[in-house]
Image (cartoon, rainbow, N blue to C red; front, side):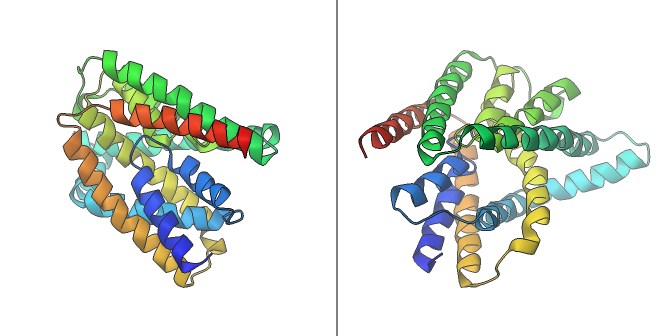
Length: 265
């Protein structure tokens, strides 16, 4: 992986991890489109490590509050932060197991590059339409601190589809489910960001033995980290007044472009 490729892919990861447009789809598309060859899975995880650092730093005060709250819960005291912390951890376990099962299934079904690209395109288009319709028609009746366990579990388990099928988007599907269940846009995005941390952290720990700590690795992680922080701030500010319509439209257009390239390349 060259330095230029590392920078580009790091920026792509940072831009698309938190926006509901699928970072895994874009990380598959760029090497395919520019004929860079297949990106090592360990480098993919390394780029996710960069955006994980962005989540940890941007929400540093939140994580401290969650950890303090978890300590209070262990002592038997009431704590909204502690409840949220343990829910984040608990829902990650079944989501991770289901994600592994579905990923193995998708690997058996999608054996060629063309089928993988068509699958990504369809996932982008279908989830884009669903995101638009759900976001447009959902009422904002639940805030982050008023979620019940059922709501947090359903949002968390939905991550499994994104882990198995590039193009679905982890943030896209969790935000969609959250909006359907009544969360306001900002709360849906914030919970989606926090929810991704345990899943990505687990993937990093599993793959860290395969990391190649060279200059490309450092540049890729750094670029995804910096871009990720900027995108988190942008999206949370944008959602105070804006909707997810623009991201849904982007998904559909990109999906159609991919299908066109596959058919006529």
